[in-house]
Image (cartoon, helix red, strand yellow):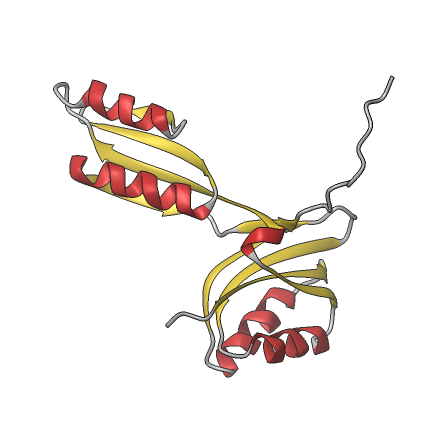
Length: 167
């Protein structure tokens, strides 16, 4: 059984912060499934999005909060988060297969970004399940190569209960 948890960590953008976070997980024997780091809304801050296999996520959060340069740690669930990944996938697409590969990709709004003599490379953006479904759809054609970004996520904003039309 998997104990995957989605955690976002707001940190100061300083050398060594990523290494300290990764080391903390490694010392505790937790496997990081995905890690994405990039600039946050304020200058000199970065946001890490970590998908980790950990039986006790509360302990992970407490340990992250203790690390130097950590400002905020939040666990997100699938219902209270907007999650996205990017995948580049190169599939076989000879002249006989090309139109069927392109038609199948269109269903997922996959964007062809490189067309070779016998392959097509697609860019797919979406939630992790969409990317997994697209990968399964492309497998029969032959996946030549594949790369995925780490997962990124933000908490959803609460919905207003009494929205009124403006004007």
